[in-house]
Image 1 (spheres, rainbow, N blue to C red):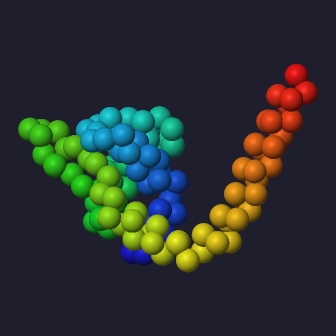
Image 2 (tube, rainbow, N blue to C red):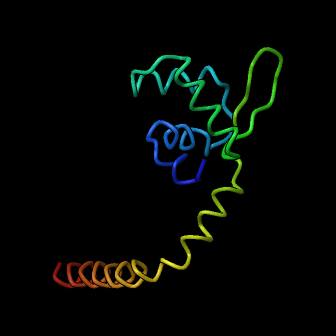
Length: 111
């Protein structure tokens, strides 16, 4: 499966967001995703499996619990691929930041 196919699913993106702060038990991930997306526990398990099998997440056993965490390597690969396209949005974002800063300075000067 292509990395963008994996990340194209909002449930899998949300799971990765949950894991960015560190390791979480599968049950905790499942509870959040079930509440937010209304899918079953087996459905969440399927998404975790896709993330694991495609290298985006790792799992380790801790007794009966399964603890999931993000594997950053595939995300680095995506970032490297996106690097050649950054020029399309970086300059406009830099210009926006400049304009926002100018507006803040002007507001402070007017006060």
